[in-house]
Image 1 (cartoon, rainbow, N blue to C red):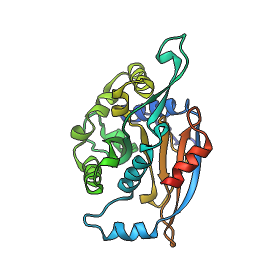
Image 2 (image 1 turned 120 degrees about the horizontal axis):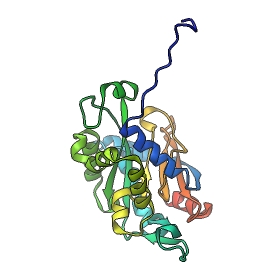
Image 3 (image 1 turned 135 degrees about the horizontal axis):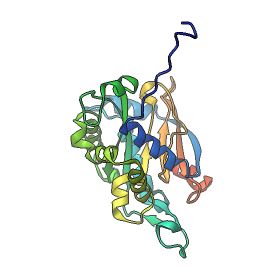
Image 4 (image 1 turned 60 degrees about the vertical axis):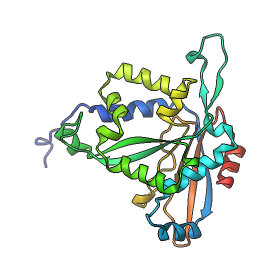
Length: 253
């Protein structure tokens, strides 16, 4: 194609893409650092494969990490800046009595779905959704797996109604809501965005070691190698956590 015939087309980001952009913008304000640990999980893999129904690694890591967080309140906490409170108060810890997991799920977009345009779907055929699961440490793995499967397959209007509402909110108001949800010292904050998150590309044979997050900790892992080993990464907010407690949390995991 010659220079004379080349034409650059532009298209406005749709609501789903703008929501992700707003979350990334909020995440960029958090001083996240990664801590890695190589884990030998061949025995766990054998048990997982033999289980009926099959349990995914997301359910396994989710439950295990929530168990670790029982005795580590920092893993159930988040940073509350003074602007969220009053100008004369110092930043504070906010701690939830229980863990709430936030799991990133990628799903094919429906061109006929809510807030979707066929042209947008052609450019961006997958969409990110965040499933919240309460107290995964107190739920059986089969129940967690069923909940994950439902969030991955049920109509988005049923399982991600709140996210769809955010997609349709005007940008300035959406960013204000996200910022409040990220920092508010309230029970609803934990229920709406979670106390920790999980995001992995292991199922795609890849790794996303430094994915954006505004939560205090976020867990990811690589595909198992031929020896049954994986590199598990825990991202942590340096305002609340230092390297040693993060490394010890991975060791306990």
